Length: 357
Ligand code: G1P
Image 1: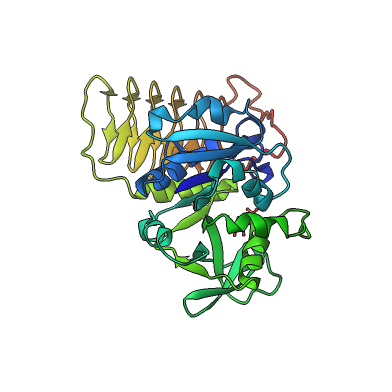
Image 2 (image 1 turned 90 degrees about the vertical axis):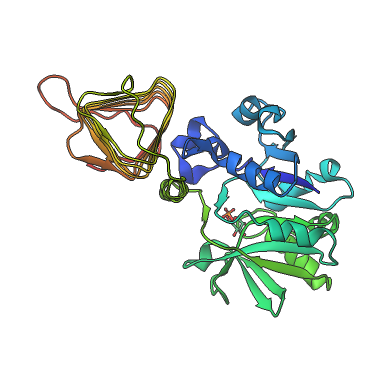
């Protein structure tokens, strides 16, 4: 079975971070979101993967290449215009050919590795299978209504939801989905919805089966959701003893277990309480780094406190009063105190930036 990962979305809800990087490359516990999708597919034995991007010059192909480093074969499919998920899937027809295939939304992250879903589908009579997870706000998702072991109806973002089972970002299809896609019309949000194509299969009398997800599932489309995903992934870090390397843990420092410290990174006169992941060449001086924090490469945290946050590469956090919490800093961001009087606040913010003091 082949797989396609959809990663061409505009990601407007994650601006300004996504003004300069595609959502699929946003790091969660220092690994890209799309890296988690690839891991699930690889774990299920799917190594021929097409990634739908909006441009071949995008940093996704530049970063992942042909997948050699990840142990998978990657190909890229361009969706130049964002006309909806069903449109993106339709473009994958030449890539998948006559095989069954998996569609994985590149911004969804799962605790469940879903191997039983993949195993049971291939040799079954089922026309499509969809992963479902319970949500508290069903109007924001595609929602499925079940009838016994089958999916009876699916509706995209219903105003009056009949269930709280949301369509999570993993679908298994047979080539019949392409004919269904060719018969749907754009939705109220002017997109070709994959949910409508699935409903077309159901209307044709085809069997669509649910797979109820175990554990957490996050549609990491917004900053809060990314920060939450980071916490959930770090929570699962296996036990590792407190690092004791005297060359890197210096002065009056206290570093707990479940702290992963990258190459050439140093902790100087600081307290770090795991679970925390720290990239390479990062310096933490006279600071506190609390649970559920991911710091990237070449970061400086000095005279500050931070927890439950994601700090990407080459960031500087210096002399900030109070604790930074639940924050998301993209590459090269700086948060520093005024170096001289007057102690003013100064902001240079991109569109959709968010500061809470
Ligand atoms: C898309 C799908 C929706 C699904 C959701 C899961 O929504 O259209 O059916 O429940 O992904 O993340 P969108 O992210 O486009 O609002």
